[in-house]
Image: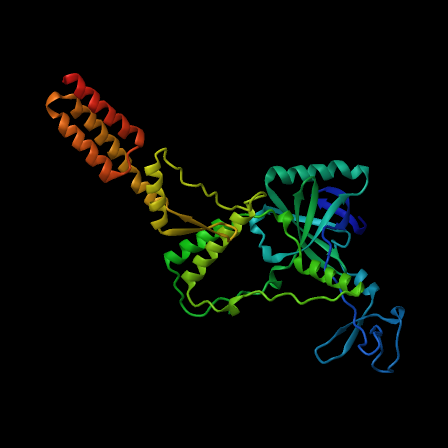
Length: 381
């Protein structure tokens, strides 16, 4: 990276030669002004307003405009003679906790690189001292014709410097807050907390400029002679919030749905699994299950991807299951009653009535009960 300033860090009596390089870069797309009639580029020329002639860069100097419009010329020699101790030095004036620096003051960011082998040892000393103290250094430096305020901190193994605005350059936030006494209910705060929890955290490295990518695609399409279709406008609700509670609840639901769709992964797209109802071994039970399923109410289930799956008969089938258990109990009761000599006829009637009314007992159980009763009758005779 190309250095934009060479100087030294003044750390007490220790001087650390450094090079200043930009830590950030601008990726925004810039446009040129053109003449719509013929596409010619529009350029600005520096013209003297007194003689209306174009002047070159070598003929241009600095001046301070007084309140009455008078121009007071200031030369580079005049500025060089001013007592400016930070002209080539980043002078550390204090070490403070990082939370003492208001983020509103932060401006441009730079990397400080050790300039030469002799600077490596004191550079490393300052870096490790900042790490161990968990503090940042407040410093003064001069850049581009003015003295500035800066903050030094450690980023990985490099000392970074953030340009800071002077305290008197920060405007007071008056008239920015809403007017009047506004009360926020606990229910609204709870929903706001739920929305923040649902949105969760984000990997800062994954964020990118969607608008810049769209502009690049537009430029590429126009350069290739392709037709660019307008994008569909998003529904922003015109910025009108009628019911804050409803808006928060809808936001929480939308955020949860978005998170579920993103976490569904590959495969079936997050569709619900539908399992068929198991058939019983008895033909009679099968008919009963079919009849029950046919009269059951249909229920729908919406998957995270927005698809609808219809289910039927789940609740009714569960309710009909205990009937077969009752039939088994009545069959075993019939067996016990058939074993006594004095109640053989009653056992036959009980078994017959149970098989006729319930229609849910298995055919194998009914057959066994009928065969057992006549055999025991012949034995007693």
